[in-house]
Image (cartoon, rainbow, N blue to C red; front, top):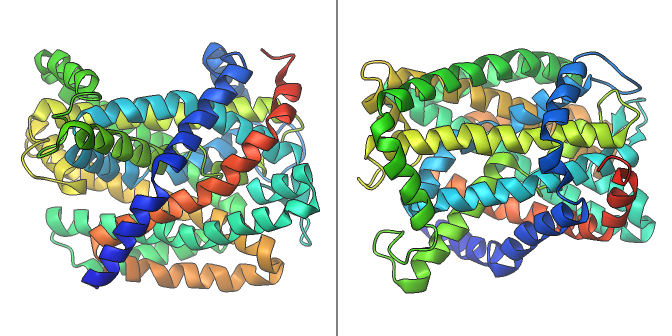
Length: 442
């Protein structure tokens, strides 16, 4: 197992090398400039559209609001709690700055993904609306590019088990085990039963559950983190200064040397940022393709809010709580570090808030990613694969709960990068379509 972990880490270093990072950030910058900063300028309008999107507005499976909640259910998870802590522990506080930059430009990426997903969505053999990178690659670039869409679908189908299943189950088991002393096997079993009760009902049941759980838990998490920051407001300026200065400071990561520490901040900041908000991965547009809308641009504006809420709000709150606690450089990592920070801020309550939030966030992530992986599998094998895939998905949950955190995180990192590459290539090639559709909304 140790040798396997070493191989995975080595592959991860290659996948998350300069090429992938340049593509992720570069694509976001290019799209932001091409859209003339429309995602930033129209942020308020996007929230208005989200509010109006609570009701059906066209053909599709779920409302625009439910589509965003489903996408958020897959993004607001362990990346916001354990992932942020990992980025700070391994890359220093400066990693948070790179998470911010990734999110700011990732809003344009997420917007473009959803625009293309709605523009090139199709109906499958069961009459359901399906879409995502594999479909806009085939529909927008032509069938000669089907191999690229197939590559994305293959990576997405496999990646779902790491990103949206085993990592989530593992983090839940770790949190419940450390706070509530619940055995990992029990956590995995309960997660399996709850997940099965939802995903067997398809996207509509997933969307119904997500649209209720996500807002409730997000607001609860905001309140808890906000209370800690209010209580420790005097430490906030120093925390913000750490984030800004150490983003480019050679001493940002413990034991680092000149360029290596800066690279650690960039690598872990971008990697954990993308893991959290999934901008550029091509996962969220799979959910947005099912929205009841006839306007790709409107759905794109709703979709970009996912990146804003996930990283610039939720991840920032987690990072600030960790930094004001003063525990970020004490050797802690993952969910344990976030739990310790919240407990330090709200003694007697913090640990339970984090563990409860992590359980619900991870549960909704498992639901959202089950749909993503299922759609990828359907693209490759047709509708006959849906039920077997759901059963295999359920079987992977207890396996993840009993796995090793480090190995699972590493595998998830590799799958993130492999998913992103076909999608980013397609976004660059299809960017003229996005710009053309958006030209009257800028």
